[in-house]
Image (cartoon, rainbow over all chains, first blue to last red; front, top):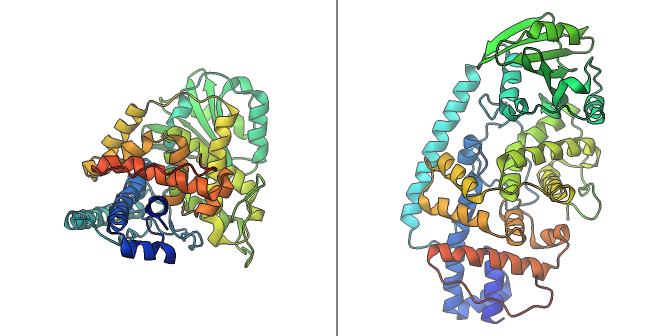
Length: 260
Length: 190
C-alpha cells in the first residue's frame, strides 16, 4: 500500500483498520500523523453533526448511539416529552466514541465533554420536570403543542386542491363536512401514534385549525385555553374533533357543524 | 445491505416484529429526532426537513409490513428519509436556501453550548456540495457502511471512498491542516 492509497482509506473511514493499512502505518510516520489528525477531526465532526436540527434536547443529549453500527438495537420508545418538540423522546445521553488517537487539545475537549454532560443532565431534568408537571388534560395539551409546532399552517390563504383534501381525509378514514374552498391547509400528521388529518379552515372570524381524531374518544365537549390558543374537543361519530383558534374565533360553531 | 433496489426498503430476515401497530408507531416516533437531524443536514432547512420526515413516516407506515425486525428500523427509516429528500428534488424545483441565514440560525440556537470551532465546522459542512455532504452524513450520522452508501447512491465503493475522503479533506482546512493531495484518477471516481 502506498501513501496515497493509505490516505484515501483514512480520509474516507478514519476509524477503519485493515491489516494492510496497519502495516503501512507502522512504517510511515507521516500517514500515522495524518490518521491522528483525521481521527481528531472525526470526533469534532460527530459533535458538529449531532447538534443541528432545532430540538435543543436532541442536540444536547442524543449521542451517536448506533451511528457507527448499522445493526445496533433501535432506541426503546419512552415517554413523549412536553415542549415545542413534543415528539422528541427523552433519551439517556450517549457518550461520543472515544478517539483512537487524541490530538494535542485532548484536555480542552475533555473539559468540553464534561460541560456537555452537565448540560445534558440539566436538560434531562428540565424535560422530566415538564413531563411531571404537564397539564392533566394531555390530549388538549398535545393538540396545542402539535398545532404550535406547525405554526406555518396558519399562513396559507389559498384553498387546497379538492383531490388532495379527499386523499388526506381518505388516508385516515375520516369524513368531514368541509369543502376544499374553505380549507387553506391540509396535511396528514402523525399524532399520538396515528396519522390524522390536520386542516386549517378559513371562517368569517378568521382561520381555525381542525384535527380529526378518529382514535381519540372523549365523553363530552372539552374546552381549553393554552398558549394563546382557545380550543374545544368534541365527540364525533368516530372519535373526536379538535378545533383551535388563535384570536377568539367562534370555534364552537365550527366544531358543532363538523361533529354532526 | 438493508435497503436496495426497489422503492420500498427491505430488511434482512430474523424474528418477525410481533409488536402491535401502536408499538410500531411508538418505535417510529422515537426515531423522529434522529430522522429530523439527518434530514436537516441533507436539506439544510428545518422546515423542509420536517416535511421530508413527515412524508417519510407516512411512507414508512404504509410499508411497515416490510420491516421484519425492529433493530433494522433506524437504518430503514433513514433510507426512506434520504429517498424522500431525493424525490423532493426530483419532483419540484425547490426554493433556494440562504445558506448564510441558515448557518446564522444554527449559530444562534447553538451558541450557548458549542464552541466556535464546532460552529465553524457546522458551517463548513453545510457548504459542502451535496455529492460530498450526502455520503458523509450517511456514514457519520446514519452509520451506513461504504458498500451500503454505494448501493444506495448507485456508485462504486471506490467512488464513495473518494467522495468521503474529499469531504473530510475539505474540512481539514478549517483546522489549519494541509489538505492531503488529491488521489490520482481512479477511473470510477466521481
